[in-house]
Length: 335
Figure 1 (cartoon, rainbow, N blue to C red):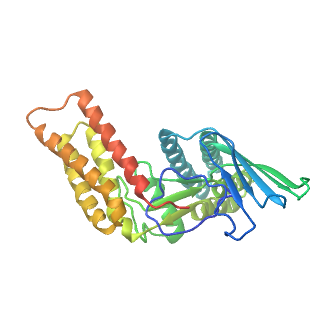
Figure 2 (figure 1 turned 180 degrees about the vertical axis):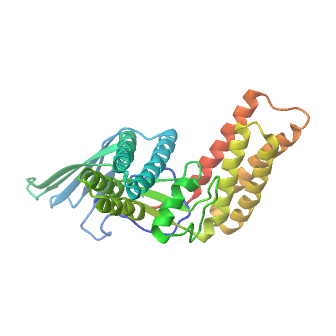
Figure 3 (figure 1 turned 90 degrees about the vertical axis):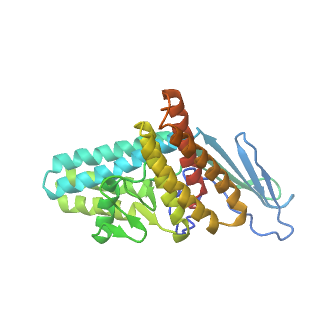
């Protein structure tokens, strides 16, 4: 979201799946006589008023249209990963002088971005400043939408991340990122839709004009500037626990109780390490999850004598999915 949300950059292992939409930061200090009245509620619109009664006052009214469910977040992440696969295929086609195929891949990437934007809520922000007499001296209205999408769903696959890293450093490794041939373990990978969309538009024009060099440059910039990769050593055990939880979920979907139990054992071990390094006020949630993981391990161990039925397996899968979502929420916010 441009112009509204500051990009407070930090090193992180993963961007949490739910991005908090903050239209305004803290008020400008606490000095009198300036006041800030915030009328926040679950219902739209949200109105924030700044300034003293009888003086210059600024009102910011924001109204959000649409909601974003957890499933929608997963869809957005998966579609964003698809965008970069189309970018990589377009680059390969351009290098091979197959401009027609390259343009098709570029168009597919733009279609995926359009689908993401259709999923994301939009917020209308109206700003009005009035003079002491009540006359409006400044008015503005604009529509804003989140444009940074975390690529966390399914642990970014090697075919998505490797070309991006290759474009950046001509290597399959960078600080904190390890790419493997099947499932990939990744750090924080966040797509910037505005940047990628702009470069895809530039690439499309270049391809239509038969300018492959310009198209290649635009596609390269989409990979280099359109992705933010972050790493935080403190969160490494949590990332490893997250990966193991995901693999346990996959094993349950395949009705492989032994493999699920093995992955949960790994997750439990990494969670125990993570519990020791997080602040004390956050340990209770980790302890609760450890207890739940222990219980499921015990259930899976008993299945050697009595395999679970479909309903029980579904319940187990849902529980593991909830752990996956919860672990992602533990990662520090990107903003």
